[in-house]
Amino acid sequence: MKKLRPYLKASHFGPTMLVTGISFILATRLWWEGPAYVIAFTVFLGQLLIGWSNDLYDYEDDLKHQRTHKPLVAGTLTFAQLRKTTFIFLPFAVIANIIGPLGIRGGLVYLLGVGCGIAYNFYFKYSRFSPLPYAIACAALPASIYYCVNRTPPLWITGAGALLGMGFHFLNVIKDMQEDQLSQIQGLPQRLDKKASIAIAMLFLITAVLIILNRSQ
Image (cartoon, rainbow, N blue to C red; front, side, top):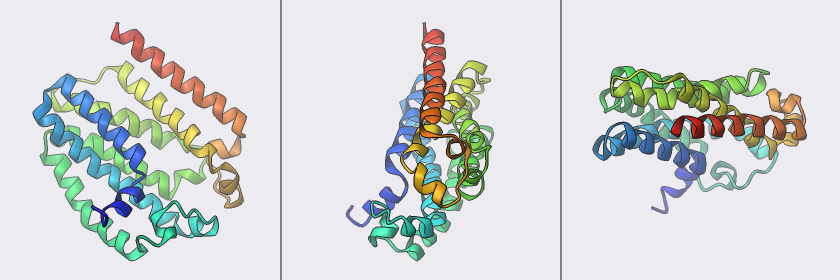
């Protein structure tokens, strides 16, 4: 377990487990616990790829800003080890999501979300359209589970997912905003300021929660 800890930390373990947990809850509500555990596991594999690709791409910038809470900077994991593991897990994550309970349709929709997460790491974090991959990825997660039970995802749940994703994006950027600006990382939150980003994040998150509470009644 000690050897696995740096890999889990490099995956951005908190957000990874949050997404995995949401997938499990949705799957149990739409299906039952048996396939829900498998769905959660395949979703977890996809989230590992997003987190690992983020740390690999940001390695030089993390060194520059001495982000020693990251395993690559702290030296508990080498760049070569993480890159090798990422390439090994990539085909397993793709195959597991397509042949697992999500099915081809649901699996491809979820993998679209994974692709958006990776695209954010490599491109969109520098763009004024940085919230877009978060919106698509967080809408794709519940949609994929609806598709796996042959149901069309309601517009309200994909809309709420998109709003939650964008809200989390604005909040997530705030802690590193000054360092990002020094590194010329100019996503939409970095082009604004902290106060505006917090206000926009709260607007997105509160709206999403109100939509979910209203539809749950």
